[in-house]
Image 1: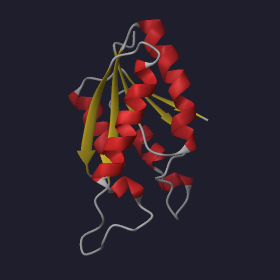
Image 2: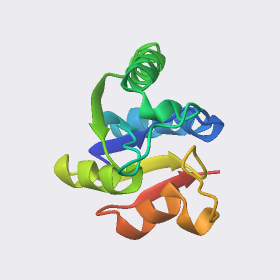
Image 3: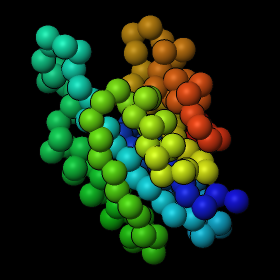
Length: 137
């Protein structure tokens, strides 16, 4: 049913909490698990905000390594993808490229904008995704 599961990770509490559900799904369906993290590009002419950890390739690499270790401790092999771009579009592009059967993500992540939840990464992924999206509250 879920041959390939895409799990976009960031440093949010919601992403950490979703990891348990991801592990259960992957074990239940014997799925391939692909971890994705996106290095956010600042808008043209702007610098990466100092608080914008997801703008640092080193921080993203460390985050992916930690997530990979978390799943390895549970006996789950993972593929890791690191991309640069706008998170919502990149998540959907990668889901399409890997033929994901399911995207699992937290209900809010570090991408909640000042405009509110309707402009969040999660909301955009739901609207653009080429496959079902499971949102973990």
